Structure formats: structure tokens, C-alpha cells
Image 1 (tube, rainbow, N blue to C red):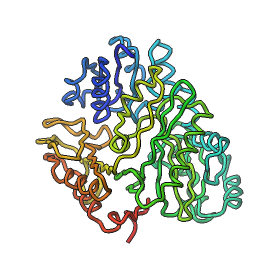
Image 2: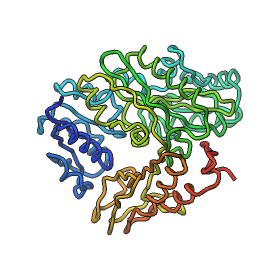
Image 3: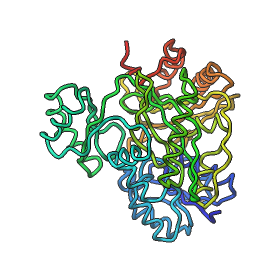
Image 4: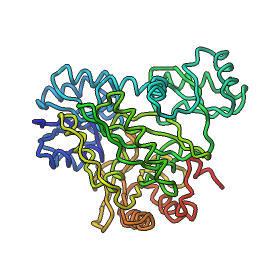
Length: 439
């Protein structure tokens, strides 16, 4: 096992990794920006290393500064968490070049799966269902030809990056012609890569993702699915496992196909394979996330497996654990610092923050009372996970958890979450990516 793990991330995931390191008996060090100087997890890590500045570009996206932290603390492994540099192949290679282990898949998978066009090709080549689509669009004429071949409606998507940046539904040739230069411009500015492609648009789909584990011995295993259909502005808001209202047979088959593809490819750490399920019941691959997910706690709740500790062990060369059986249901909601009426991010100082101990409820947060919520990073404040023998109990416990979470000083989306968790459509399992736009 590792002698020390350097954590190059912040917030809830930094705290979660520290906890996993403690469980494994591994000393941890954490890099932190000036904006995070009051974060409670700094005292929980064995060592805290300051980064100059506040902006992500100067701190958690600053590979040179993070590698300097690695040199200073003498860690033999780096955990990137999620976001920031977690899927950056160049950073992973730089860590490895310094003689340390990057806790994630090998850089080749960060690079190939980070390219959505290449990822589609790889998955299709290994028998996984992929939505009809195009390659990179050379120009407007190529886009027109591909659209004619595929048929509208279509989704115009960047080949790199995520978060919905540059994505747009196009329903006819005129709309495609207008959207293409804008999508290219946004992709180039956000990801340094202006390639875009077309993919079949699935109307009001279910967003189903498969959690994968793989070791460095050529084996892979799926840990069932999560339903992440409830999203606002392409940002996940509610996640749950197992997927409500769907037959287990097709889901188990999807997991087995994902497992088989990962094994054939030689994938070698945790990953999440994301799909869309259409009204016809068919699934189509959309992307592979080569990191631990924000919503990993949902799978932990229904399997009893510590995914972060397992990820660290796999990176150290351990083999796969036994696959646990599904146990009950879990629902996670994301509490954001934002105005519940407008959805705009909120900032301020947390005058009070308390996460009470409740049966069947788990909180994950990297914030504490007195800490500033700044505009520099994603506004995620906390995650609330409810677990129970049935979906009704899991939903009820998530609702109790949201209501019992005490936050003062910063506006949050808690009222939105409470409405969702009591909405008749949600309670009936009527979930899809158009949920918030449905009337």
C-alpha cells in the first residue's frame, strides 16, 4: 500500500478521500487554495499544503503548483478526486514521471475516453450499444450531409469536455447551421478543442450509468447502475440506485456488457459508463467518466463497499473484491449554494452549518461554520444520501436529511430538493432528463 497520498482537490471529495486514507491506515496530505484556508478537512489530513491564489486556474488546475506540492510532501501517490485535473492525461503522466502513482486509470484511458468520438468508437468496437452519430464535423457542408444521413432531431456535442458546454439540440438544417459555429467557439474556449460531432437526440430519456471497477490484472466488474435522470441545466441534481421502475434483466445485461467491454479494453481502475435509455427501452452509450463520481455514495449505500478505499487499493495493485449483492435503495440529492428562485450561484459566509446524526442518512460536505462560500468553484455545498429497504424509505430519509440540514448565511436550493422529493411524479418513478421542463 502507499506510504502517503497527496489529495489535489477540495470540498466534499477531499474530505472523503482523507476518510478513506484513514480507513486504510495511509497518511494523507491535501493541497488547498487561499479560498479554502478555513476548510475543516485541512485539520483532518496529516499535512496541508497551501497554494497561492484563489482561482481554479491558479490552484487546483495549476499542474506545476500541484506537482511542487508532491515534491515537497514526498507522497508516493496522488488522488485527483473529480473535476479539475482528475481526467487530465498530461497531469497523470507528469505524476508518474515523478515516480508517484496516479490514483485513477492509466493515462491512455484518460486520453482516449476523454475524446467522446474515440470513446464511442472503442465501445462500439467491443459490442456495447452506442447511439447513432458522426465523426468530427470538418465544416458546415459535412454537418449538413451527416444530419441528412442520421435524421433530425440531433444533439450537437463537443468531442472534449463536459458539463453541457457547447451542447445543443438541433431540429432542422437551419438550426444546425446557426448552432455549429457557436458550439465550436464554446468548445474551443472551454476545452482547447473545437471539434464537434452529431449524435442522435433521445427525447426525454432516462440517464442510466454503470459503476465499474477494474484492476491491473485484467479483470473488471460492474457494481450495478445509478439513475441520474433528474438534472437542471445539464447538471445532476438527484441520483438513485437501483433505477426505479425498470426491469432488472435488461439492467443486469447492460452491466455485464459494460463489464465485458472494460475487461476486453484493459481498463484498470474505477470508471462510470453513462448511457441514455429511450422510450423503446434501448440503451445508448454517451460517455465514460474515468474517475470517481460525485454520486459514488449512492452505490456505496446499496453495496456496502467503500469505493474510494477500493479505488486506492486498485491503484496500489490489489485485485477486485467480491461483488456485493444489492441491498435496499439509496437516493442522493445535491445541496448547492444558489438562489432557489433563480438558480444563480450564491456566495457568502456560513454563519452556521450542522449535519445531524440520523438513521439511514449520510451527509458529505467539505464546509464548516465560519467558512466563506466563494465564486471561484462549483457551488456544491453538501450531498445528502438516504438509504432504506425500499425506495419509499430511501426517499423519505433523504427528505428528512434535507430538512434537518442546518445552513445559515448562504442561500441554498434546499426548497427545490424538498419539492422534488415530495412530487407525485418523482415518487411514482416517472423520472427523465426533461423532468424539470415538463408541465
